Structures are given as structure tokens and as C-alpha cells.
Image (cartoon, rainbow, N blue to C red):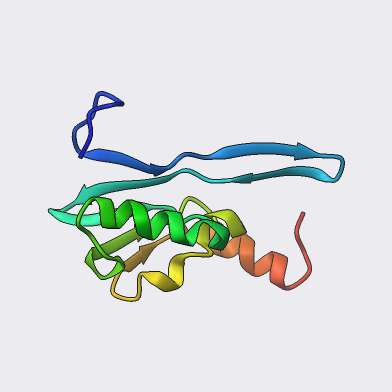
Length: 111
């Protein structure tokens, strides 16, 4: 792991990229590797377009997607969840409030 951020137990695998267009905001989230109860975990999984970068970053740390046992999702925007299928063995954590909001959006009520 690195100590760039002053923490030796977290590692930024992919840095987020904010963007703004005439149609609104668009971006790519930050993906962070950390230890949770002694097992490897990710905070968010990133956009599918960055899948190869994420796998390469794990490989550089002698890890594979199967080594990730926990995934913490900040929310359900596409740039945070599209690599979730890589982590089939991971337990996924998301807030109940986010799940409730996603259900409302799927039902057509997104106020």
C-alpha cells in the first residue's frame, strides 16, 4: 500500500475525473482499495470504460478481483457501480437510503 495520503491502509487505485457539459455534470469516480476486518475492500468500483485500468491497478498490487471481499458503494450512479460484476465474491454495502431512492427512481418518482 502507499502512504501518499498520509494513510498506509488505503490506496487510490483510480482518481476521479469531474466534468461538466451543456447537459449537466459527468465524471468518473475515485476507486479506493483498503482493508476491512483484515480483508481487501474497495470503495466504489468505477466505470466500465476503466475496467482494464482497475484490473491493472489490482494486478500491480498482486491482487485479482477474487481477492476483493468487500465493496462499499457510495451511491448507485453508473460511474460508481459498473465494475461491480468483477467482484462476484465480495459482500456489497450500500445505504438503505440510497436503495430507497433508487427504487423511487425506478418507479418514476425521482423528486
